[in-house]
Length: 421
Image 1: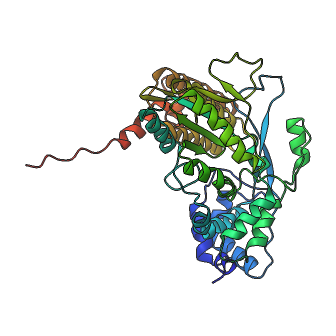
Image 2: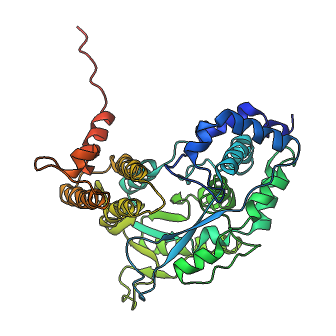
Image 3: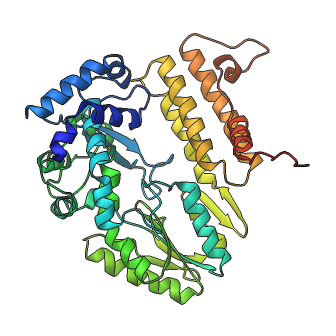
């Protein structure tokens, strides 16, 4: 059975829908939301299956959404920096997810994208697993770190190379026209993006994959599989999380050599990392990004701070957590209820990701206070208010960071086995 035949099977489309990440109020340029698609699910999947089977299915253009980087403006100038999320319609997301489920195993067999180096977008991966791997390498005597991120990685992926790698890794090319269409499609609202970012939006038909599309994470891991392979074969203690990389070594010199090694591998992929800064160097002017060679106790990676036997959520991670909540509260595209759902999802998501880390009381309580302030403002904007003996959190039924973290930590504790007499 060809991949195309498998793609239009309704049961495969339904399975992909079940596995799809469903953000509250999320929609593409056609305006159809996740909830609306769900309410008419059987008819939507039937129509989608028929369109693919008869060759009438065509991907819709993407909805560009400028996402401000971090919670601050650029430190070099007053200009805000953005990355552009490119959001497919819900129906296109279902098709992309189905394609991913159909070809992932084939690509993994060809390129070993599930490996001991890569921890993002893979089964058994995640921030916690990546952090514990870093800590394991430290415990085995590696006190120096080389940390880097690939410059504009998703924007710099060569589409021709990517398509060739996909085609070489799957059993037939019946869905390659669709994969190519998804890879080459652009946004529909470039004028709106320019108005919001104050910058000219430029589409490059040769480079880049859309951040926000279900296929992009798999594309990223396939494209960097040669880097993973070289790191493993040369016995580097490496942890890669998408375009972020850390290598642990026993000496400063080995960490510096790792920079040269990584640069050479990425050069073959037409990718780059930032220039190197080494512990002991005179600090450069400004706050431009650098690849860094430093001691383990000064490592910040994946929103975590590593020090000795402890791993903490970093101050920046706490700031970004509350910033995403504030952004959800200020999103004019969402209704009041959708804002609450989105806020709660962000709190639970952050706490779930970082509950394994050592607890820091002060920044957690600070975020609880900021969260209360955001919700009070949200209530006032909707002409609502709290009573004298209830907080906004209590009125809206939203748990604090402190409570959510403790609940998740408690659930993760191993259950006590009964005494056997």
